[in-house]
Amino acid sequence: MLRHHGLIAVMTAGLALALFSTGCLDDDGGGGPGGEINFTRGFVFVRNDNQDIYVADLSDYTKVGRLTTNGGNRHPSLSSDGRQVVFVHTDASNVSSLMTVATNGGGAPRTVYAADTVAGQKNFKHPVISPDGNTIVFVYEVQTTASLAKVSATDGTGFETLTASTLSYASPSFYPVASAPNEVLVVAGSGIGQGTQLERINLITGQLLPVTNNLGTDVASISGRAVLSPDGTRVAFEARLAGMSTATRIFVHTFSTGATVQISDTGAGSADALHSFPTWLSATQVAFVSNEGGANQVYVQSASTRGTGSLTLPSADQAWFGP
Picture (cartoon, rainbow, N blue to C red):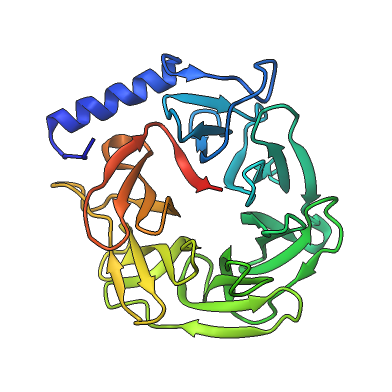
């Protein structure tokens, strides 16, 4: 269903949201007594009303499975085999933790690593699991700087900060193993949420190499997630538009040519809309979250052309597609 920004679109999106929120869509359970979830490939996402983690399989997006019931969760991502979700949990004391949960809903969420509050660690973001499943890489803040770190995905040991500079870092994304084992692409900039360049970090050697500081004339700064394409040749990212302090759109940058293309667009009267959390569905399609119409919903758009996309998953935020 293509998104059109008139009365019909508002009614359609509103109906989809209402169905999802009231349970007319089939909830397979999970995170509780609902039994196992049939998840092989699809989206993991957060619902804004309860801040819990859900999955929706590609075979039928009208059926969703709930994986957590503790609330306070954000930034989920899938392991390369699709069996685990890693996400950030924030408790009532505002302490961040990295947690994992099985995508089949068969077990309780497990805390892997909790913030060292004595050291000033706070506000964990964008955790990702390495292709071999052994390491979690994530972003954490101390005072007004955001750094990249890694821990064991098994037991949370071996905490190591991977960046040490005046820059702030964000949104690690693993390169394909065949082209760059143990390396991640990361956003860097002078302040938190103000990414102006991309860098490449080797998790074993700590070597950091610049990738590009030319994100295109339409980009003011990368504001959130940046994620590599399946073959590692392109990156999709959310960015603030040049000349607009609040609006964000989705862009795709091709490394070989240096070209950056805006792929998400809005309808009339939606210039201030926020498009966020890009994720690759394939080599040719990117999904993203839009808040147009007053609700966060997932749309799918071509990775090479500009458009409003197709509504794919209603009432869903911070979506990640995989494996």
